[in-house]
Length: 196
Image 1 (cartoon, helix red, strand yellow):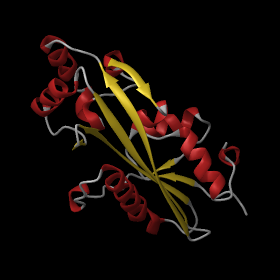
Image 2: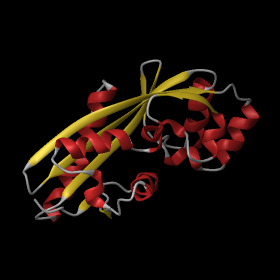
Image 3: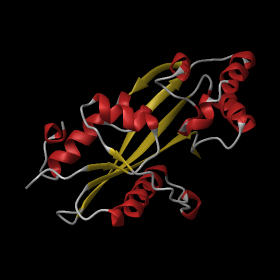
Image 4: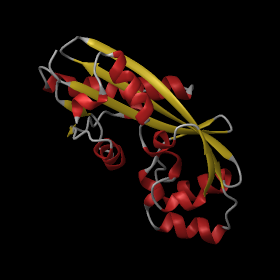
């Protein structure tokens, strides 16, 4: 079995950088899938469904490829949060999150067109947020970073200053779980080193 092209069905620069850091140079094909079409209240099922829809949207553009779709949300006190719509929403979110923890869910999907196989998984990481003053929250929101991320923070950016600790997979919080990626590739009959 030859190694198919590795396609990332995501516009996320953080996911692309994670893959590149791990030695994988993905072809990037953002899905532009309309996420509002999916209404699911359970975070793990929501991210798995969205990740699969993104990968399925991109798949028809290829005859043979390994297509990865991902989606992340943060659940805090049972409430699901994706990217904040505007600075005010990001500010309100941080006022609720600070001093508490949230569970970051990332759905991971691989569609292997050559094997006609789909694999769907979810990884969860618990994130503990620092106590922040309103001034600090306002300054962070003003950077624009929280508007680009599920959960209104980027662990690998300024948001990393406001995370006290994490329990679970660190790269999952950035956009995809590298250990889960390796396991999923193995389950599909590949080694991650095939894509170096």
